[in-house]
Image (cartoon, rainbow, N blue to C red; front, top):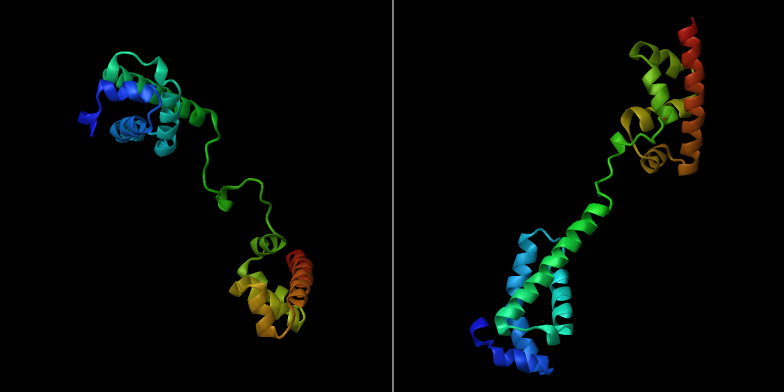
Length: 182
């Protein structure tokens, strides 16, 4: 299609003929998009559209026929590529969230208790708990069940399981401290 765009078509486009504007766009859009994509512009399609908005708004300034238009169009494309590169450099670098490396996290009470408990101290400390608390702690922490799964298995509400776990961990911590103190 580039061969059909002549200097006469450019002159018609400068006078505002829609067919001439379409012909220019069709002949240059793919190369402009390819240039922007090859230069690493993230939204090459959007940048190409911006190029043609600028080119068509300033079409009356173009001289030198189609060769001049092509040079002007790629000058605008290069400027958009530079703008996109600078904007990307100024913007924040986005990375995926990794909970394991987040320094803002504090260990949960259950993590603290489990880290303190040695295997040999676990059973005597668990024996100090009531039956429901012990079962809740074992299912939630040792087995790794969710609140909902534990509640269903024990025939209790999720709120009850939360309370059992909280009280059980507190009692377990106290019992562990007593076992360690002996």
